[in-house]
Amino acid sequence: MTGRRILVAACLAVVAASCGGGETSLANYTERVKVVVDRAAEQYRALVASPEGAVLVAGPDQIPDFTPQDLQHALERVRQIEAEVDESIAAIDPPDAIADIHHLFFNFDEGFIAAQEALATKAGATTDWHELSESPEMSAYRSALAQDKEQCASFEDRLNAIADQRESLADTPWLPSDLKATFEAFLGCDGYPENPLDVYRPAPPMP
Image (cartoon, rainbow, N blue to C red):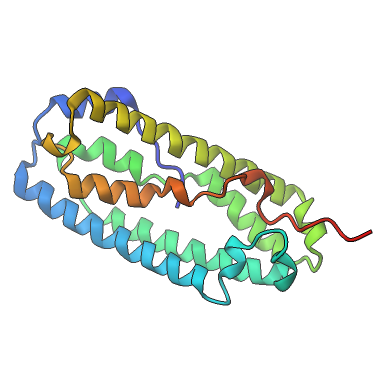
């Protein structure tokens, strides 16, 4: 899941405001968002744990155990999960006071999705991992992934800064602790690869 963005100014504006939708509205919103995010996280964990999806987290030494077509199918499944989240979230009408944050959080980055889909298509037409690794499609995907990781870390820094200023986000009317945990789960910054520019890069061939 990618492309979540938030502006510090928007955060501070909402922090300073009361929740115009009321506690009941915000509680209902939180519950509905949590269901969507929890389901997506469960689907992704199951995919990665399966033989079909293990390629998504394969390191250089594991890459030869899979084919580029395995990556194609796994990426297509990831896109299905993303699309399901997108559709479900689009059906949720957030309280006015959190609407801006809602849309910024759940705005899938079209540039990243395009890179992801292009890589899946390229993988389906490639039989050699080294060729795929050096392809323009892989380069674009790695760059998009690295950028998304930076944006995710930047948001977490901003969120923590607001928490420091307010002492505890759980005490604010606009972001109860369970909603904060849900957003953090959706962001999943810890789930990004350590070196995005090296993903799906096979080990160099033996001399």
